[in-house]
Amino acid sequence: MQKRAVDIDTFMEGLVARNPGEIEFHQAVHEVATDVIPYMQKHPKYLDEQVLERLCEPDRVISFRVCWHDDDHNIRVNRGYRIQNNNAIGPYKGGLRFHPSVNQSILKFLAFEQTFKNSLTGLPMGGGKGGADFNPRGKSDPEIMRFCQSFMTELYRHVGPYTDVPAGDIGVGAREIGYMFGQYKRLTNTFSGVLTGKGLEYGGSAMRTEATGYGCVYFLIDMLEASGSSLDGKVVVISGSGNVATHAAEQSVMNGAKVITLSDSDGYIYDSDGMTKEKINWVKELKNVRRGRIKEYVNEFPSAKYIDGEKPWNVECDVALPCATQNEITIDDAKMLTKNGCIAVSEGANMPTNNDAVQHFINAKVLFGPAKAANAGGVAMSGLEMSQNSERRSWASDELSVMLREIMSGIHERCREAGTEGDYCNYAKGANIAGFKKVADAVMAFGMV
Ligand code: NDP
Image (cartoon, rainbow, N blue to C red; front, side, top):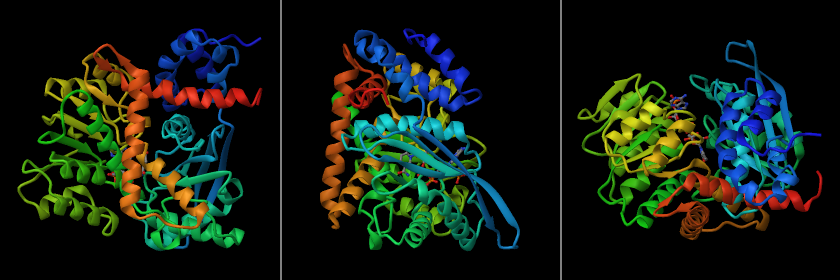
């Protein structure tokens, strides 16, 4: 008989043995299990039913070949994936990532996290994630189109508006979603809400592009206000310069904060004057239209500096918003941030903070908004896009803005309820427990499946 997971070490030993080499997946499970196992010990029905073991074994791992022609007529081969982690509370839902680092471990961690995040939104969505080890950087538009079409030519048989509804993520924006939706429509002869993040002309939702970055800042504002502070006048350091980073910057500036950095995988820019809405719009155009690099910022705004090959975490700030990728804040970065006076971190990216760095923030009583809560605004808006598609109507952006704000406040409340310990709220723990409970109860309702 399989041993009941009564302690974290026994549990992790089993998980690592079953999933060798998948270090990001181990890391994500460890972070959740650290809070959930003590909770299950107080509520043994979850232990008896092996619920955590079941949530750590994806419903399905799909991997497939993606062949496409480059502009020189060479045949190129990539690997595509879809991880369908759990659909206990709704169809699988989660983004597609196109990046050379993509592998099964990274997508399993993302699909696992997504399951709890989607549960926290209060909307009926299960957890999934997918993508390919395809590098969009430097590819022409026709190459991107051929890749997306080939990718969807296999993926289409595994997804559907009631089965699995992918969205964008790193390297997958409006252009890629358009190409994939077009191919799905052609293959199935249906027009349905199979993808979210669609263009407004063909079933997309207003506010979807803004939602993750804005939501991350709303969560930050709620954490600050609950501790008697506010965002007004705070100095904010942000990593990344993509969708999440630029919208987090925009919403921070709209709330009176001074944003002084953005970055990409080559380095970061430091703008001591602070970024304005105009400067942020310039970055959006740089990234989305010209497909340029963040270092070009200093050519346009010469008072700023570009620091090559480094991350922005050694810059003095009140607030840090990691919005690029996983594991970008190490324990040394975390120590530097707290030494320099950082009082709050809100994660726009998925798992950007290493587990020991998270622990450092919690021990230092830094307000720490974990990704599965703080960046849930994007998937929440995707959930609202699904509702609009089902109803065959579109809601106005001001209505959706109000809904997003309410959803983020609801998530903040759920985390506070489950994570408050004396005068400090451990939001990471709160998010893990609140996210787990709903999915776990649904899993148990289905019996042994
Ligand atoms: P984009 O592709 O728009 O932007 C990604 C940004 O992160 C780019 O600036 C990119 O720089 C940088 N980046 C990527 N990989 C690395 C790396 N290894 N080291 C340093 N910088 C890196 O993606 P998004 O903004 O959509 O996503 C950012 C994060 O937010 C991801 O973790 C994603 O999972 C998460 N997220 C996104 C959601 C969404 O709605 N888009 C929803 C919830 C979470 P470069 O150009 O050099 O690669």
